[in-house]
Length: 256
Image 1 (cartoon, rainbow, N blue to C red):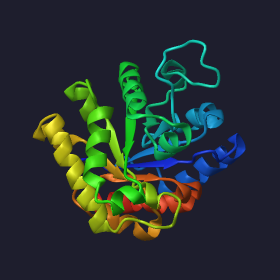
Image 2: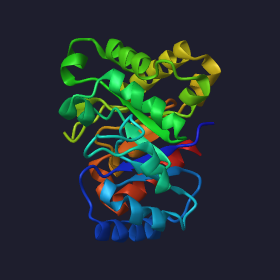
Image 3: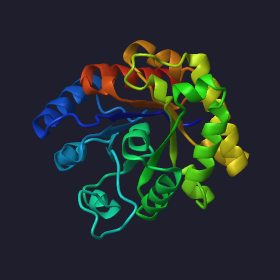
């Protein structure tokens, strides 16, 4: 049985003060429940304070929204894996559609970051997903296959097993549109088959695959009841600690 993993990607939102208030409210609503892996992913400026607060819990892990593939150097504005580890960051989101679309990150860039993350013993949340034009053009499987194979290139079996894959259809991110549970399950099942082809079936069965794309409390239970959906990468709805607490509760109920 794969343990559910639910991650709150705040994107460019939340001050340090707001982060403190959020975590206090979230813990009051959800408790420190270890049946679900909860990852809080604040902006870089709030990582240090969030790390201090999360250190007092068992269930919550700290994540970062991105990192550079280089260990150090003249890369103004970038953050290294070593810097993240110093703040006790455990997870890092790589390949998010916004990084691909707005900042021009390629499959090769993401592959380099995945290697760097594993070298630093960070656990990547590796995002894949198609645009609306790619879905309407019947290219969903081709796009997912390319992103998976190029992104995971030259990683070992254990590294791939320790990578969480997040399927995020780009057309459903921040739009209010959500893939139906059936559409999401179909894509997740294909991803697991591809992972089995890249690695081997027992490894693929242990890899957790999240769904991301306008997840909220109202649809979380139906999505996570699907056999190949192991959690959620939550954007806008994660900015409300009570809403996010309901999503984590739905994940626990679906997988127990």
